[in-house]
Image 1 (cartoon, rainbow, N blue to C red):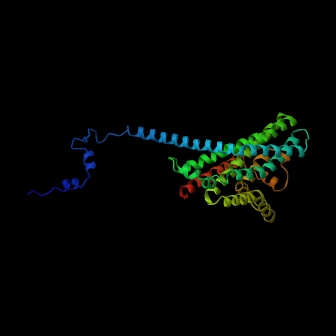
Image 2 (cartoon, helix red, strand yellow):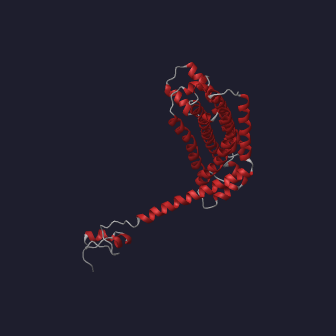
Image 3 (cartoon, rainbow, N blue to C red):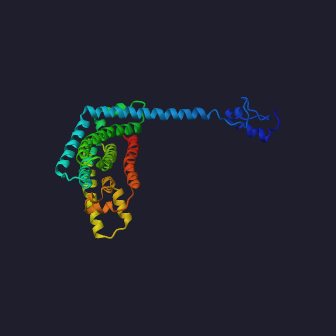
Length: 324
């Protein structure tokens, strides 16, 4: 027959075995030999090393997917087709835009290339990326990839980077041919204006490729993705600026509204980014109004970067819920 149990002892009995083993005794020492007040610093090192190893593994898997996408695009002659397209249209612009000597002549040629790229580069980017996910799903390649020890978000990011390498390479090589002709015709002083155009063309292409990737993640059929890509091109390239011009002409809008028009359209941001450095060669109409909006280069660059990152992040989130 046992005596009355002390309340403190009854409370200690309710502790789990792990808590009783790790609890310190009266001397302040735990049964495993550690002290109650000691900090466990050694455990932080393995955790940090494990996190670093996980990041390296994720980067390695993303690059593997990107290299695979790049090789598939090269085999399908996408890179060659886009490069040839940009070379041909760039040469046509140089042929028909005139050859007046001096910086003004070079500025007019770069402005003409900008107008061409505003139509051509977004269309090429959408055509390159509209089947990035839904097309791979129809081929069965996506199901095989998702069965491997790789995150779906890593597949999306790797797919974007691989196709971006194809698009950026084709843009640089294709329009680079025009740049060589411009420097030969107008001198080395025209190189800075052309370089700004080239970087802007790569940026706007990257933005529309990200939008195409998002569309390919959302829709369930390849034909729907193609139709949605065409609607996106029509809106951003044709309708958006016409609607903005009508609103500006009909109402006295504040400067913040004009800023919103520019930043909400990567094509407008591209035009302002390039043409703001050309002065009188920028042209007239709504484009000149946008150039005079006072937007800084940093804000436009940040907007284009956001147009690249946000759609890819949303696509990576949507693809986790996609049923194959």
